[in-house]
Image 1 (cartoon, rainbow, N blue to C red):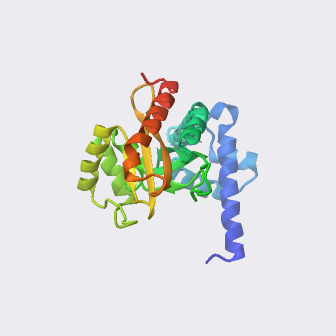
Image 2 (tube, rainbow, N blue to C red; image 1 turned 90 degrees about the horizontal axis):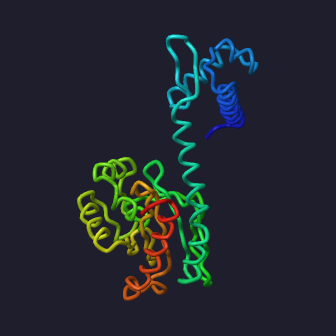
Image 3 (cartoon, rainbow, N blue to C red; image 1 turned 135 degrees about the vertical axis):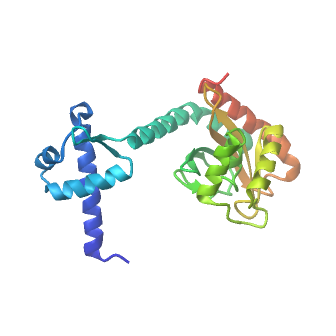
Length: 259
């Protein structure tokens, strides 16, 4: 474990790295050299060089080798795009999520695929005494969740396989799909039905139903789901309850420009 001094050093380095990024963003992102950065943020050139090299390695800073100057990297644009997309889809989905929660009385989740994981970006709590332990910002595997299945069903197969290889396919319950081939076969069923089901695959005794959200280009950008216990969502109710989820996903997709 880190001691207090190590912890303080780590935090200070992070703060200094953020200071460098903020300075690089000034003057419309004009490229700046080590000496200029050092002088204007009051840090030693050696410290600036060490930190900016790390930021460059991570993609947050790029170097113009002809001028020996640095500017903000494309990784920040990628992150900014993710934040904008999340804000846009949350805004468009909010009333629909509430309506879905009122209709089913179950927990509703809105999620995106980020860094090969499902990330919950919004949630409507169940109107029953049974509450899901999930939270906004929580990350989950794609192979064990209905949300992950719903998104992957409409991604290029090689992209899905890449995501699976990044995070792996651990067995979370006895029902979890744990091989790429079985998952690819399962996605055929998802596409045929138009919705995905998590049959106690992510958590014991929890069943979830999800449907895909598309953008104006037809790309799958997220998914919406309902979650409950196997008593709340019995097998014989899945098809009936999926209609609410599919309609919600269609309505959100329409608001995102999908025709």
